[in-house]
Length: 137
Image 1: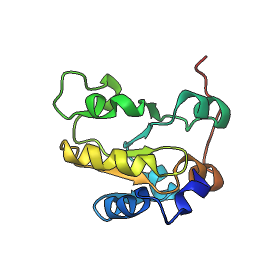
Image 2: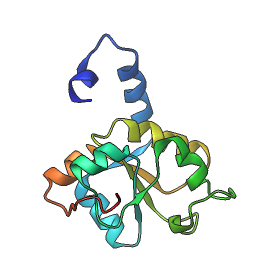
Image 3: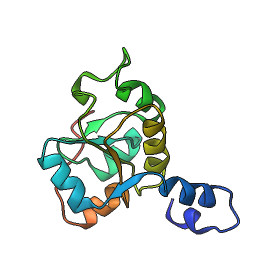
């Protein structure tokens, strides 16, 4: 996204800025601490990004198009690895744009402890935090 996000003539940027006033955002180091303390990182990136860029060890992959169903605190389709509804979650995409909108959606359905990883996977990797190749074929 990078260069696209800086286009002031678009309609998305002001909406994104507004969304970010309503959600919690954390940096890579805080996200790592949350994971160490039992929280869960949620990777919403497309498979091609994971194949090309790698993955964060221990992160749960949930495609963006089913995220709300798979993390619904009381829904029948909640992902079994998501843990209890009160578990702290950090959602990330490649650069931290789509994840902001995703976190807003989760908050709206009642996910209480959820944050957006500011800068996304790229910021995590740039911070020198662990990354490995995607083991999925």
